[in-house]
Amino acid sequence: MPELDLVGVSKIYGDIQALADISLHVEDKEYVCILGPSGCGKSTLIRCIAGIHQPDSGQILIDDESVEKTPIEDRRIGYVFQDIALFPHMSVRDNLSYGLAVRHAQSTEITTITNEMLDLINMRDRSKSYPRELSGGAQQKVAVGRAIATGSHLFLLDEPLGALDAIVRAELRYELRKLASDLGLTVIHVTHDQEEALSIADRVVVMKSGRIVEVGKPSEIYLSPKNLFTSNFVGETNLLEGEVLKTDSSHCTLDIGGHRISVPGFGKKVGQRVVVSIRPEFIPLTTPNETGWGGRIKQVTFLGSLNRYVVEVEGGIEIVAEVSTAEYSTGFRIGESVSILLEEGVHMVLFDYPTEGLEKEISLE
Image (tube, rainbow, N blue to C red; front, side, top):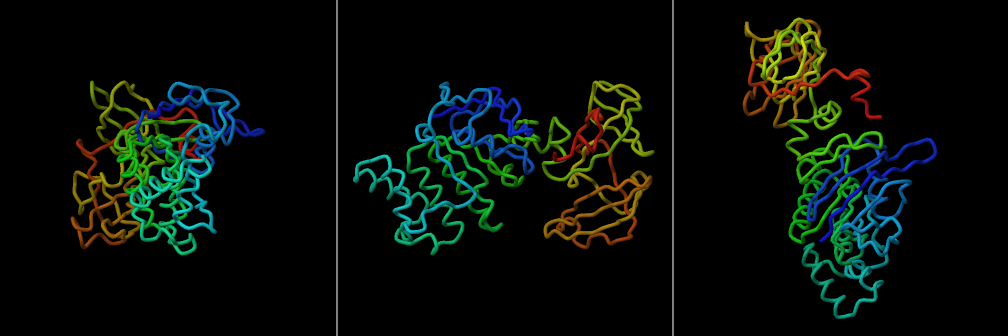
């Protein structure tokens, strides 16, 4: 079963640094999602792994063997694209068996494996159908099955669900994850869909401008990011600029636009500029309270299970809060007075203020 190692992989197109010194270790049977904005190098990276592109420097190792000079067809890698690349003149069965036929497998082996794939993707009853007769989700399942049928155990998925409707995409991503687990596959899954990455990955790799910004478990990436870009890019957050007034062994007291809050953190200095990240779902929003930050509802968005509020508090600071519809079904209205209770116990993450400025740090380029 394959392990993958990338060591200092770089790729340049003219004046564009598509990949810059990428190093990453992927364990056997691990499901890794690569997440990042458009143009960050996600697809270039897996195309280098597949052998479609050659890196300008660095090493790509599969089970400790360098594969930079290994032809695509000999890398034993399954590749599934966003564009569903089925042969339109072939039935589901013939599409599934194509890779085996190209490798001159015995007819009995082709039949056995193809039948297994039809059962695996639950499409035996559609084996004689042509791609045009299938839904987008069904077509992509056939594309995945065809890749699996070749016997590969390292799979590269390049936005495989991007062309599908939201409901189909949500269903199919869990099917993909189950297939990978059941078959013991090692998977590198490129996506721009944050929910997709967080819900199915063992680890998430966050990229920006050709570089890896951060790698971690989904819960770490979302709840305890080590990088400001990650905190802002993955999900929604409030970034509040402040100054350290006082410190102790575990907390900092900050001034944020005239408001004082205590935030978990150490190693900061009095007078230092910092940024606090607070997810909207952790913002306690209540009716007016003397101990809270007073404000008024500026915008209301109904999201089904949540109500999303933009609150302008004293000092002109805008804060986004999300409140469960079940918890507060009547909701607040635009113009209504409220209080935000940023007390100890509220989940917050503290960062140093970036040397090149906050806007530059969180930009997508």
